[in-house]
Length: 258
Image 1 (cartoon, rainbow, N blue to C red):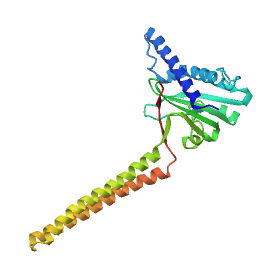
Image 2 (spheres, helix red, strand yellow; image 1 turned 135 degrees about the vertical axis):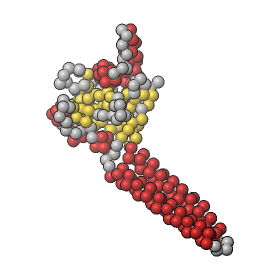
Image 3 (cartoon, rainbow, N blue to C red; image 1 turned 90 degrees about the horizontal axis):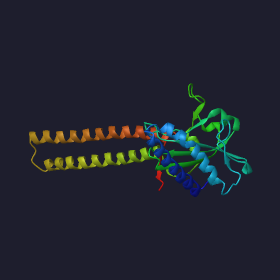
Image 4 (cartoon, rainbow, N blue to C red; image 1 turned 120 degrees about the vertical axis):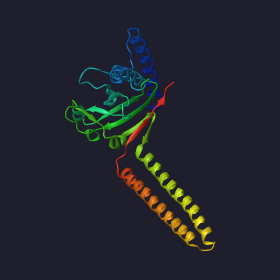
């Protein structure tokens, strides 16, 4: 229903609107980018408006309604309602996808558009979720004012990326750890070969108390290298088991819209 071209059109128009907001704020001595949460609230209406306008090319009856309790976008001919959300990364880099839990519970299922924007409103991910239900979200915590966080490893199965792309952190971490295990093995083999060569050189020479002591020292060095490699591998295996068993954790690559 919503394709790549529609997503790019919406983001391009939102960028133009964002630029006018920056200029208007500057005229009155304000910084539009100072508070991204407030910026995103102001831009949310533009998101709904431009998306509804773009959808009218295919669905002439599409419209947006910003009144409380009304769906963000409605397409009566398809009996379809779409919720629109605009968000940015938190200070710790995490990205949260929220919804009003009671609204979704009453509606049973809804389509969602989540747009992730960077600070300068130049790079984006445009995610289209179909038929999300309350099972895709956590129950609101006390003090959350009815806002619920998406369980990403559940909800992402219903997502299409129209702009930007996902990164499964589990896969990234597992790949890093597998490479680390290879590096541990390679370093161990390199060190042991060098120590063993020194040991063989001593074996070819006449035995003396000093050389015997040196040989024992070299054998102990090999033993310590082995213990060190086993310890490092064990720590890697613990982390591997964690990332393999953990639900998928996501980060997002944002694309620049020219």
